[in-house]
Amino acid sequence: MSKFLSKYVDNTEGDLEITQFPGGASNLTYQLSVGGEQYILRRPPFGNIAKGAHDMLREANIMEALKPVYKYVPNIIAKCDDHDVLGCDFYIMEKFKGIIPRKELPEELNLTEADTRKLCLNVVDKLIELHQVDAKAAGLDGLGKGDGYVSRQINGWTKWYEKALTPDATSFEEVMDWLKANMPNDVAQCLIHNDFRFDNVVLDINDPLDVIGVLDWEMATIGDPLMDLGNSLAYWIQADDDDVAQSMRLQPTHLPGMLTRQEVVEYYLEKTGYKCESFTFYEVYGMFRLAVIMQQIYKRYYEGLTKDPRFASFAESARYLEQRCLKLIKGE
Image (cartoon, rainbow, N blue to C red; front, side):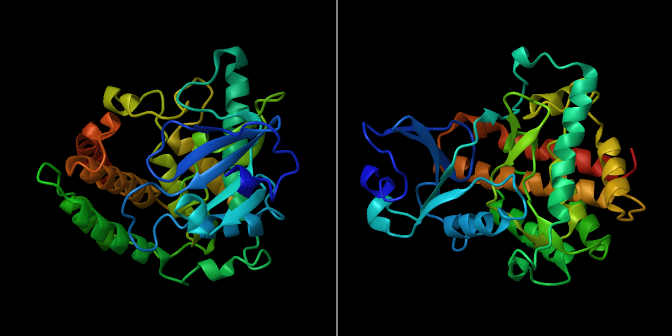
């Protein structure tokens, strides 16, 4: 790896230190430290990979095209399709020196309620800004498959859930039937992130209310912006959610000053001008999609392909998300 890296960065004197970032259930992320600098390497997970999944070069190419028009994307330093180097495709990017807001904000930030609200709005604004990028001008319009994004997603995630079923899984049948029967037309076609969350943004160390980076572009594509927002809100656990939801929280959206899910939707629609009589479909879709992802991961755990103890409860978590979907559908 030192020899490969030396082709792309100036100073590689000294030992190369490689550290894997913990967490994550998809692509693997490592920090490369050499010559007093740090870089980030992204590669697919080990083991058998489904065709078309974990396409590292696709992710890197999207980032390269997007960087000139969306400054929050890290610079790509190198791409590699030579499997003699790591045994897989991978890419190396710059490391943003900042704060990633995970489950809890660092205590030393000492944000007031007003500060927290401003931070929240700044994060949502970055999603809005992404949805306003001219994908054609960036050369990314080819990512899309045209109208019908909503139906493709519902049919696709339904199929993927059925393939991921285990004997102890819930069926999600009523939710899937409701989604198929209530599909709206696409609101628009734009560049979407597909995994936009607090723990995928980077905050400025000197001004922690300022977002300087957006990470993890693995699932970026051209699609419906309200579907993208629904995906984000599936992770948005607010202060008045129940104890089970709180136990699943991965980001600090419960803090005083954070917008509720309803307030996020209202703010987003006001800023973008998109019309939506009811956001229920998108919220149910987001939670169903999250449940599918969790069930897919759980199936690997169930079949012994991973022993990560974090995944042992994912089938129960998916069952809980089914109940939340049903409550939304019934208007509770």
